[in-house]
Length: 231
Image (cartoon, rainbow, N blue to C red; front, top):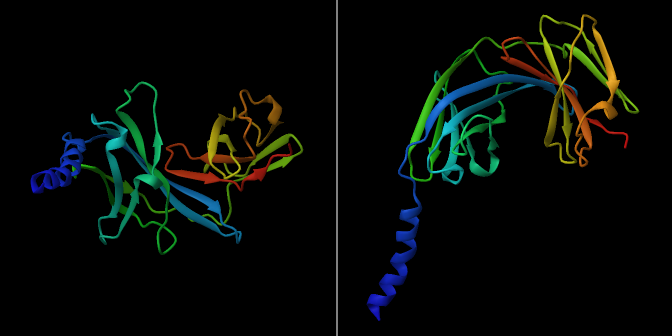
């Protein structure tokens, strides 16, 4: 009887051990971008988007968490699996995916210039890390463009092409989750306008639209306020 009891207790532990990973995830590359947007009070705030392209032969379900560390102070931010954004990129196998977040925020508003470390951990305790540098923060008082929607017609008015060189429309769900991204084709004018109806394969569950602009080296990004769709 005692032997059966011990066996019953040990079995879950054995199964858990067998499920643990034995392959250390490898970082293929990393991306980071300062993102500026207005909060509910109308103040321009900064968030940091940080992602790593992770190659884990044990699969996506083996991922546990990602830690961002400011090397000069030791300040850390950890995102667990349930708060992680997973993105698959064409050209890579199923075991390779982007993991990260675009919601890292600094206690003193702007991330300082310096070196940062990203560390990914899997369920087996294996870790893989990479470092990146941030240049001095951009300190805008307003977005370098205006984005408006009148009925079905959207309008983009560019204020400073030196700050923003490319733009996209992002369709959002009712809970403001990104659904589809459309690149805006630019010309030599500062104002661009078109109809939402012209967008191909617009998701049926889209409820909001916003504009995203970024600089030439993609180190800075700018998000307009989400605007409710008229239909």
